[in-house]
Image 1: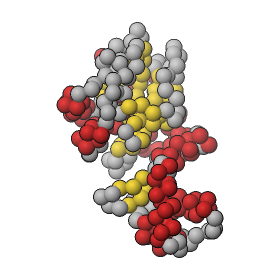
Image 2: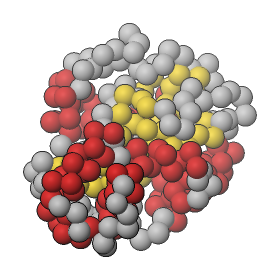
Image 3: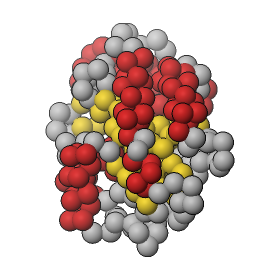
Image 4: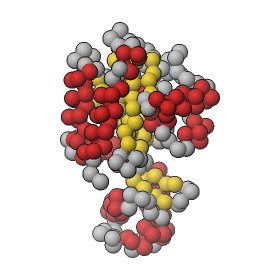
Length: 249
C-alpha cells in the first residue's frame, strides 16, 4: 500500500489503513516498506498512534495493531453499523425477555469499554456507550479478565482501588474469583461496582473461540438478587452465541 499523501495527517491515516489491513499485526519495518516511508517516519507515526490510543504495540512480537480508540471513534459515527448494528437488536430482545437492562462491552486496556446499552423498562443503566468500567469490580470486566490468558500479569498491573465496600482489593481473592468464573462460565457481582446494583455477565467468543466481548444484565438490588439474575444465564449465553454468529468472518 504506497503512501497516498505527503502531509503528516495523511501519512497517519495511511498508517491506520495499513493496520486495518493487517489484523494480525505488523512491524515498523514492514510498515515502512509497504507505505514507502522511511523507517524513521513509519516508526514515529506508529509511536504517535500508540500514544494516542489508536494503535497498540506488543513488545513480545514487535507488532502494531489497531487500538480501541479507533473502535470508540467508530462507535460515535457509525452506531448502527458493524458490531453495534448487528448486536443492538439482540440486546433489545434480551432485555424484552428478562425485563432487565443489557450491556455489551469490550476490553480496552485495563477497563471494560461499554459498546451498547439497552435500558430495562424500570430503570436506566449506570453506564453509556464509550464509558469505561474497572476490570476488577464490574461483572463485565471480570468476565473479560477471567478469559485473559495473561490475567495474572494484568492483575499485577491493576491498582485494585475499591469503588464500594464490596469491591475486591486483594489480588489473591480476585484470582480465586476469576477461577470460579472460568468454571461456571459467568461473572456475577453484587454492589462491587455501584452501590445498589447487581450484575451478571458472560463472555462472548467469536466462532474461532477468541474472546471478543462480554455481555451483561444489570438490575437494582431491590428488583433482582444476584441469585435471581443467575437464572438468566441461559438467555445470556444464547444471546452471546447469536452475537458471535452474526459477525463477519
